[in-house]
Image (tube, rainbow, N blue to C red; front, side):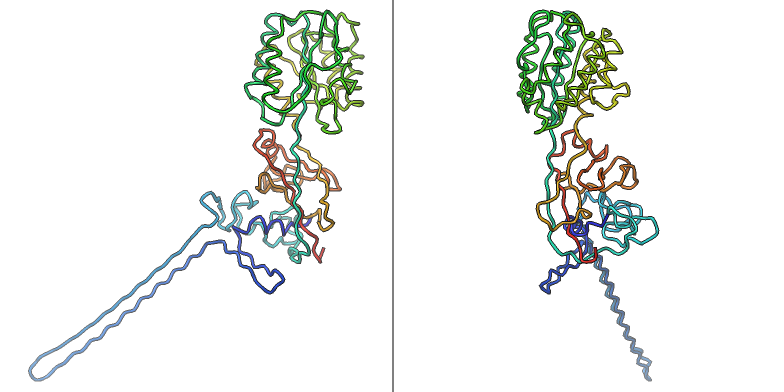
Length: 430
């Protein structure tokens, strides 16, 4: 990958010294702001006059004048927050190796030494290209929301302490704000909907954004009477085959991040009593036909391991935790399971469509979180910039970016509001 010279120059005008010819004959000088000037001037003048005559009068006049002037001016325009351990005038995190003053953005990347001196996406490319032939292009990336449909067991076996614990956990998730704000669009459904095996023609609450919506879901759950009925798990999952049942949640064209979180305290029972194989086939159908990923949470000891495994193996969910499903025995464990699910399904991989302008070079690109440069990390395991820090391409076509685990956690925590890809331009020597 080529060095994104233009994007780097624009990003760091305030901390580097660069001379640029803008084509008009004018040279622009950007000063790092550090000027150390020490001027010492010492002038010593000694005049001695001695007069000797017969009257033995001696006149001696000595004049010594010394002038010393020292002036030191140091101004750090990089700011008090600059961490520069190797004194090369590049601050962390932009300096990818702050213990070596020969390594910094814009340095000569020596060919053949296996060291990335200029902190870009390529090692050993030699002297950087400087003949930029066009303007850069900024492309914002949309931080995807996750649609999370909670499908809750409402059978009679959930009555009592289990129901109280389930409501307590859902309060923490939906109301108390233990999850990143703005990234999860919740929905809610339950089974059976009425009577022993009753179903409905539409979802109880479709997915929507915002804390008010999440609070409304909890208020509905909190007002529900004590659970009754049997356990039509298969029939309830089957409702989501019909895209009109939950039109927002099931619109995976508009947003493919749809997850059905099935919370049950027992196996399918009493409403046809479908087998584990049938439950697995239903989870596989939801994944392949509607694009919905099913995640199973066994609440208590009533769900057999075979049911948990068959849904985990067919629901399209990656093996996290290692078993592929979750179990919980109380409110705290259920809350922790839901938090883990949300943290895992918030995406770290984003499509990067090319800019509309034909004048760009996909080999010269930087990514920014809220205007702060995210360093390149070819396999997310390089030091520097650090294991799990930075970004990498996931496809040879360079149309999909993955933010490494540590960096992506900033997205998952809800602290990142703007992701931008800045494309540089091809040079005449490319």
